[in-house]
Amino acid sequence: MTLIVQKYGGTSVGSVERIEHVADKVISYRNRGHDVVVVVSAMSGETDRLLGLAKAIAPRPSPRELDVLLSTGEQVTIALLSIALDKRGYASRSYTGQQVHILTDSAHTKARIQEIGDKRIRADLEAGRIVVVAGFQGIDEHGDITTLGRGGSDTTAVALAAALKADECQIFTDVDGVYTADPRMVAQARRLERVTFEEMLEMASLGSKVLQIRSVEFAGKYNVPLRVLSTFEEGEGTLITYEEVQMEQALISGIAFSRDEAKLTILGVPDRPGVAFSLLDSVSSANIEVDMIVQNIGRDGTTDFTFTIHRNEYDRSLELVKARAQELGAREVTGDNKIVKISLVGVGMRSHAGIASKMFRALADEGINIRMISTSEIKISVVVDEKYLELGVRTLHDAFQLDRMPASIKPINAGFNSVSAHR
Ligand code: ADP
Ligand code: ASP
Ligand code: MG
Image (cartoon, rainbow, N blue to C red; front, side):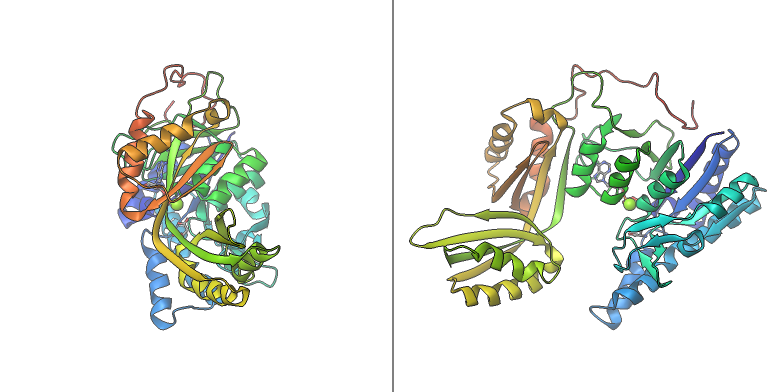
């Protein structure tokens, strides 16, 4: 008997009809002889709605209370799905994170899973029941409810699959796999049959919200076979895999973008040891994460710094940096929160030069000015003005011909080590 963990996202459980559809889908897997554990998100829009209620009362609600509030969304859908399964004559049980004992640290609104109890789930599976678990939530050592960060149901599913040693973790969503770019922005985007963990991790970190970053980290660490599929259409989806495909690798696998960017520039900082530390420390000691950092070559005994942060932290960071810059005797602090980041990702970059210049030229030909650049072994990111986001992404998709299957790569439907329903 194979064990599958399936996760259905917000759109997939967005209405009573859709929940009933999910019940039918789960049953179709069950009827093929699989044990099934299902993880569900809140109904689409529900988490935002709840967040809106809290913010209507206080602009910065206590993270502990936010977790009590936001976790209710998933409690609704587990019960509704179990009711739908029962109606169809299939025994099932729904569980909150606390009931399963999904133990996390105490970092409210962004908690990390530390341990998962599998006793109750195993007993249910043994008894032939379908198990339905609330995504996104856990409990800390004090018994307080925690949540795992936006999109966290993906991580619940992968962590459960790891704990239960499932044969596959299937993420069902409103697109039929991972694409070369967000298909909602690039009509020509192409579904990838496979993508490596490494690439998926970069794409998720660089803004592709199709999988939460931590779910990919987990899958890579515990070697969980992970697949992204559509709730609404049949298909093989995209397999996230360890192998760097047997054949020659595509140069670029995909394009990711992030709208959540902002930058701060500190001009005329006295050029002496410790200034970089001091400026960064002003934000990092307030728990604000810094992404890209650029320091210009010093002139006349002074230097300039620019760094990027999450757009939500812009106002607070500007305040903190201004105060520190004044202490350091810097000339001026400026900021811009209308910037975005566009990234090319591909393990094929390792063995090919010239990708950056092709990227920069394609953007220049469209008159898109690059504000910042950062590279790693398998990605190149640029920061550009917000108004160029769509143009930039589409231009790069075209320039690297991502709509076409690389000549050396053949479809690999045959021989899939898959437990999907439609074979
Ligand atoms: P769910 O509610 O099922 O978790 P999400 O909205 O979190 O769904 O993730 C699915 C969405 O991710 C898609 O609707 C798509 O717009 C977006 N997306 C971003 N980048 C990609 C990509 N490279 N491939 C596929 N989908 C992507
Ligand atoms: N409901 C949560 C969110 O909207 C978790 C999830 O959907 O994965 O972020
Ligand atoms: Mg999601």
